[in-house]
Image (cartoon, helix red, strand yellow):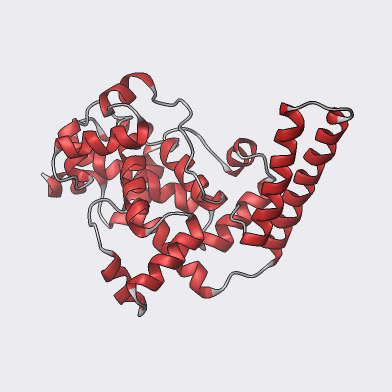
Length: 278
């Protein structure tokens, strides 16, 4: 979770003391470590409960909707200036609010979103590197490889061959809401639920659902559906794989569920969408 400066100072002091006790054992170090660990656990519970009880201001809700939009949207890139104009604030103020909310500036968030989308699209072997690069609006294929390697420490081809479905390094300096979004993008083809996130991030299922309601103003199921439809669009336009198979690979339970969700978000059937793209 995001901490304010005072909270962070308390936590950092406890962690430094614990590291010192472990690296330079003294009389009672084992008991001291247990005591410090318990303090950290209690602080985590306190901060989590305080954040659940505190109502989110409307401005914060709007910021998280923008964060979600920035990561989810690949076909139509937009600038910080455009986003600020839509909200009637200055670009500098909006950038600061984004940074306070998720730990990234707008520019960093866009780069992070592109890489998460790239990792997700690499699940589909039929999609070429050129297609993925163009869809995510990299200036050229070399730029795509350079940025991907900077974030993932390997090429897109190496990631596709070695790391699909393996744990990915989580985004630093960001709270649960952004980690949830990252996890859903990378595991959208699997059968995941709020219980999956609760187990993955060591929290109550109720807490997971409440974070979606408070931060994103939608349910887990609604967001997962949006993500799956987004990648289905990319797959339909970039391959000739049968629609039934695309439905399965994108994690939909049945073809009818896929058609219903696709029409809801794109206002056409998957078949018509593919014809229009061609």
